[in-house]
Image 1 (cartoon, rainbow over the protein chains, first blue to last red):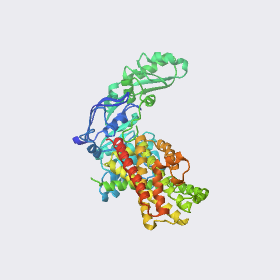
Image 2: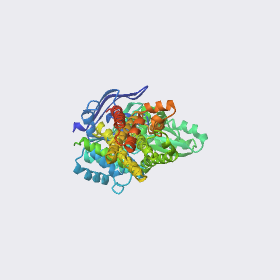
Image 3: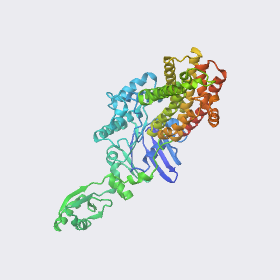
Image 4: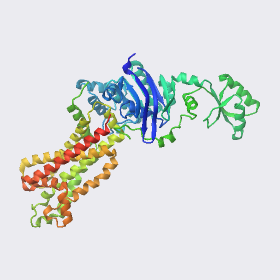
Length: 333
Length: 258
């Protein structure tokens, strides 16, 4: 195990005037692991990334990235990491090739290697044909892929990807997932990935940390976290609104209500999958007809719900307004 | 992996120039607007040359100094808005994550501005030659003009960079631009200081450093080698460079504190 590819965080805190964006988090990311940092907008994900990439000094706590302290050994940390931050920070007037050449020069690649590395990365992210077009003509997916290529120019041992697929269509998202998985599994790169997409964390991450209001509320493999919740839930949509209370009364015999279910009536089944047949029989016995009845296995959203009492999807929007922009010193504030 | 300071400066300067060349809407106004203003002023104020003590018979030669300084003011805005945009879009964060030294970032940015400043100077000199202006200080004077243009672009470019680094907002830079133009208009840009009749205006023009920048350029065009004008002009320009670069360096250090 290569200790130099790890991320170790202890009691990390970041305050913005009156708001504590990150409140004493501890985490450890092992070399070659994809760590999914999951949480709603304003939860503290980007602020954590900015601190781990040395762009924002912590208010308290310690963090070591690639074996180096983020406060006292910034240049060593930056030499070991690559980062694609929340918005693809690209110059619309430069071409993809211009960006990669600039990055290769500033990252100190030997002159004779810059051109070949540029071509290699353009090929790798599927931008060879668009390489000499100005970035302002790129789609969101192309910009994200270029952003990833820029993060990889100097062959970092650890990469930070801050919501890399936000706003992308499913095809671009899937392509980026494949590339990230390849980086970790084939090249042994440690990946710290923030996301607000449950599916992304589920598909991609070896382990997931769920952050809410600056605290890590759950951590583990996606499978383990879901197993912790354990039981599936049954969700019923009454055919007529008037039946809502009666359907709820029937379902309540089979388990406790799922809080946060708004579009349907849901209970977490006391008897697991086996309880579904009983539910159907009970509804039938009461002559209740439902438009839809669904058995759902636990998801990471259920984990989030169980830990915070809120659903992850859409839960961050109201918090975003109150939270400061997570900008680093050099950029967004 | 290592990269020299010169390579870093070169890479950033190349980007700065490339950006400008790829957005004609920002490269052309610094050439066209000052030239148009000069043409309009020359047509309207030609009669001023008949005032006793006016230093030349050609108002065009007298007015040619103004575009040099006005163009440099445009440089302030361009340098500032470019850097502010980099801050706003997170591009500066990207650069901060490389081994780029702060001094290289600033030097590269300013090298790009100076290159464009020299191009502007060439344009104004060619315009002057085309419309028949005789450069009293000759070829040597033109060479000095280029040097002075580089110095003034450097100073104003650093000032723009400082403002960008402090505010982090392109809009704030553009908001400050008219303020900088006030300095141009309360200077000796249209009338020699000794011929300004309004007392307060003459005092304002005398304490305004922009007057000495204009008079330095003007002296090379219409007077020849005027040691006092050159000393004052270069002295003011050098002071602006020193102060603005120091401020920009300080602001960059704060912004890029990593």
